Image (cartoon, each protein chain N blue to C red):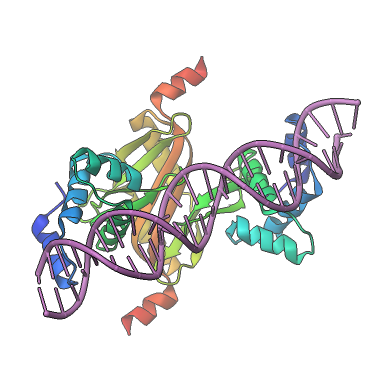
Length: 149
Length: 149
DNA sequence: CTTAGTGCAAAACCTTTGCAACTCT
DNA sequence: AGAGTTGCAAAGGTTTTGCACTAAG
């Protein structure tokens, strides 16, 4: 698990942010939905199921805050809303997203090959690269098959 | 130049779309702004400067159509609006985007290394990959320097 | 107690859509 | 002529913001 509560508690203290129940519950949603890519609305629904009523505006503000603190990572899959997942940047393994153009499903794929590419590009471009995001578009196994019929 | 007017004319004929002046003017905007990543609003401003009044809705519909026909490529740099650029997918050279976290500038970088990665991932994941999009986040040369001071 | 956070409703944005008028082919 | 296209205004959907109230440190 990539989430270290003590680490987070410390980050909050440093910047004098408060670790409110709302924020803890929202974080909890991501821990319970590790391999999903939740939108603000998704999170709002989930916390509501836990019988906690949290305002949608608070959800947005919290997601923004967690992104800033690099606890979550904001991403975009082209469906008109931002999605978030736990930021595992600290771990050595990056993962990429395979997005199915037919059914919209997003599959994850582990790979480090891009690290090398990143170093090369950083050197050639004079950019100081701190992160990357890769999306592959195509057809998943199921949709690939049904398209061939 | 990656735009072949005859090719486009043919694509339009096949699907019985009409090559209206509005569509030509919008396409022209992209030809005149090759290495920018124009938003719908950007395009609307540009055509207006050419003293052509085109409705914003038409701009949106046209951008959508061109994306569908793979004349333009829709992309997202996380600034809350879609951006478009001429689709050079047909050429062998892909380029990636380096996005500066400080000033927001987007720099392009040519590289094919990802082709290999795409093949590998396609094989391992059972996905039929047809396209990819890579974004690197970091600090451009200027912002990198000012951050060190 | 003091400063930050919450909830609500309203506002701000970007994008899409319905429809009557219009225009390529 | 006829199917596709435009422009406008209205509607839709996501995200942000102002403000009075509340709660964490």
